[in-house]
Figure 1 (tube, rainbow, N blue to C red):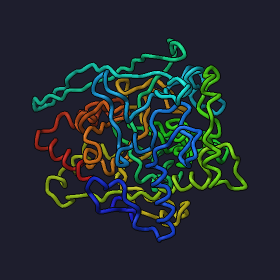
Figure 2: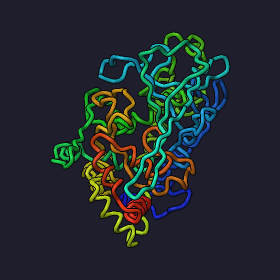
Figure 3: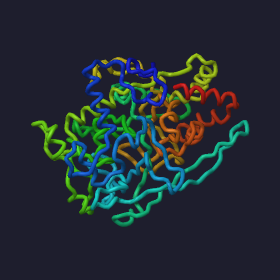
Figure 4: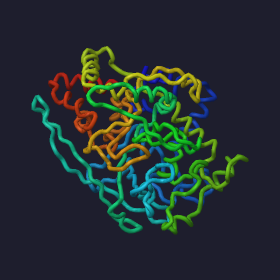
Length: 442
């Protein structure tokens, strides 16, 4: 029961799209509203349509476009492939007022490929790969590919030599309410644990725009976002150009004149959803933002499968022996006073500590984010990872989707995880097969 009472036994193509069984009919109504908004295709304003507001610059027209079946995205295999389910984070040296990355003055904090009519898209990013091989102890060969990012058709001139670029695939979105419900005290206790093999792990301290203070981050690939509400609002404005109460300004920089003068979609949407406490110039109402956040909070987590299979049991033992479980912590408990009672005091099995770890120079993006360095990444949850390819056959692993298989992902581990990788390298073929079978059962 990976998600406690928010666990689903579905294991097919809709496994990541199931509502938590813990909800009553009224909660299910809000969940359905959020699901509709997550799946909705947005349209360009002005339009007599509640879905008006796309852009002025954007990457995709719906949330689902980057999170296929609520699962993970993938990197294109060739320079001719479009970044359908990934984005490019951008920044320049320095930090913002709260320690956040400094956005690029012309292109902002991510590259938006498309623009509404009359507004140029910012440009196109593409990947080139350099391949190399890793030899395992039994002679097996693993081919690894390392991406490099390149650009074309940049609308506002060269990015400059000091730009920092980080490619990111869309992550899975189920189980986020449970991760939000893990207490700060739990994360600090995990940080302070004495760990073997030079493993450390630490929290990221970030700015909470809602509480207006510094807090422990837990969302984003560098634990750089404080709350699920901020994560969702940031994706709406960054990826779709949809403004919210937390992100009330369109995603245009000072030099993007046409972008700044493009019409807003607020009037059509607020004709139906305006509340007295809201400003009329955001494109997503407070109620709709809450419903979308609620949808993310209450997506169920798939149950583990084949847990009594002998190979799976052996793989679980090898996972622990290789020290993988030091960072990919199997069990956590949610706080007793979670924002939703149905998420409180749940024993969950996400296989993460939500901490930052130095993963070495080969996985580094060189881009700091609050207190996270250019080599640090948050431990990604592994729950549901064995079903990833069912949702998206091309699903990639690691932050930039470079790994096409779980074994490739393991062989990219460096820094604090290098000793664990070497233990896996030394395994026999049967042991390695058992380890992978265990991961596929999570």
